[in-house]
Length: 609
Image (cartoon, rainbow, N blue to C red; front, side, top):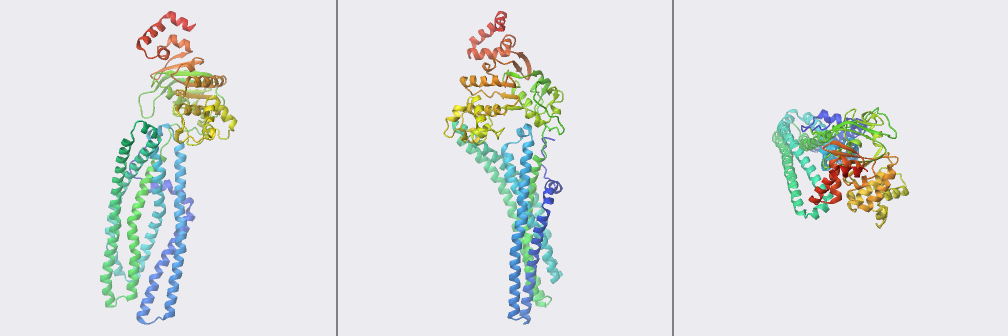
């Protein structure tokens, strides 16, 4: 279901179900890396045996210089083998962790593009960026260095303890006596580490979102002289992030010294009891030296235990956050066997009622409307449901069965992509990319040639202003079109929509920042476009709608009137009020007189004529 939010840490089986297929696909690479790691550990285990032979031989005067040179050559050969194989396991296993990171990042990005508007209303861009950066790095580290360290520690521990037991079982039991204390300590600290690291990742998301919002709105911050206040807020968030990071650091700071301390206790036990055994002749000096060498090899796994636990806890926490997003499902599910649809002749709304996800109050109520080729205007007060209606026509939110039809086919039975390809949409806020003007206009049809791009720009009354830039259509407009004015941004977005030549053109109040002269030029092209296509224009400026085939008046989510300009002046109080306001300005007395005048039956007949 959409909107799932699980704050409980995911289990290892759940994590494996998510990343297991990637491990299976790279199983030969991982196997080869583990074999190389195993061979390295075996080579390291042989070295203390060689030292034992050399020490015992020297003590017993049974070796000469030639044998010592052979022992040294063997140790050098083992060292060279270890160096080569260490490179191999690092390349294979760390390389696998990077491949896993790439696969998860690609899957996350692909999944995000499949989610609908309801999801992005709940999740900020900063949170999603944090998932694809900080959280994904934690997963990569857990499946790379964490995996290596865990396998190495497990193999080395088993092999070292076995070799120690071979030398003397009682001394080995004394050496591993402190290990249960380390296991219990690690278990307690790991649970706390998980909890605090989850808070660290959440704070990092907030920090990322604040930085993104400040940079995107830098001009507004400067105009309102809010730089100092924004810096103060950013500092508060940063200090909270540091506070939780320091808590994580404290836990990590306990894990590593605890491992080292227990390792040193083991060494102390071995020196005391092992030394007495050498004195009594129970074990040889060479065996004692080899035993201590194996104990030093066991020290690394004990110390790695805390580090591996830290990496895995971080990885599991971050993987749970990524899984939480991957478990999201769009409310608007694509129809797998949906019908394709050709050029629309009619769009029908039948008792259309809609409420946004998580809200009880409907934004649209019982709307019945037929839309045919030509210009349909939609007007109404703020909050009347105009943009919501556009969003439903653009198939950004689901509608109930039997409420929205295209060519008499229910939209829920039509292939979603086929349905969306019928239209081009110009939203209220122009969505532009940090690239050239030409690429922004050609976004929906990147293979389009320059002539078609310029024709669309001329239709949107922006061509001459584009050519005034030093690089013309190759001008880089910056993040969200920061180089352009509001009117220029809107007209470039309109040119992008016109370039598609889609049979349905949705314009959601996208000419609000355009001057009257440019508006007249644009409307001339739109009226020509509307001769063969459906153009649905949301606006509170009535001048562009005088030639509309129909104008729909919305109020509080209901369709209250439908007709042409002159008809609505006579019959719709809302439309008449908007018209009076725009015609006569904000003078209250003049507005009242005008409204009384327009309410007169004789006046209505004259307008209708």
